[in-house]
Image 1 (tube, helix red, strand yellow):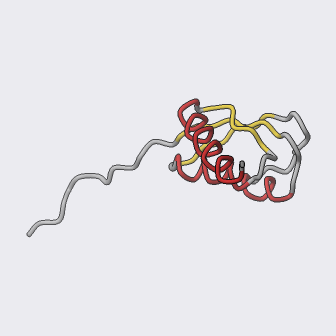
Image 2 (cartoon, one colour):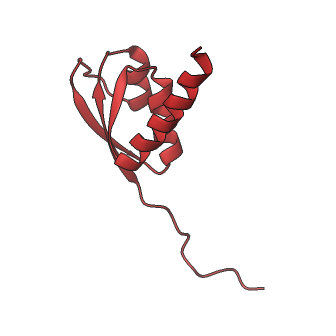
Length: 88
């Protein structure tokens, strides 16, 4: 059997933008950003939308995902589910 001559397929990087709500060391380390001030917007990219979503949620409200809108929507749904667990 011949080895495949096709090039491996790599997904395209997903660009994202976040706004710093509360500067924390955790955010600086997770996103490798050293100049964090409240209101600062920075951009990054990842091959995984799951990593972006997990990283924003793990930041505990210290950042707000500005884009992409699709991941923002997913985060809003997850947040509503989490909130419903603790209400009433």
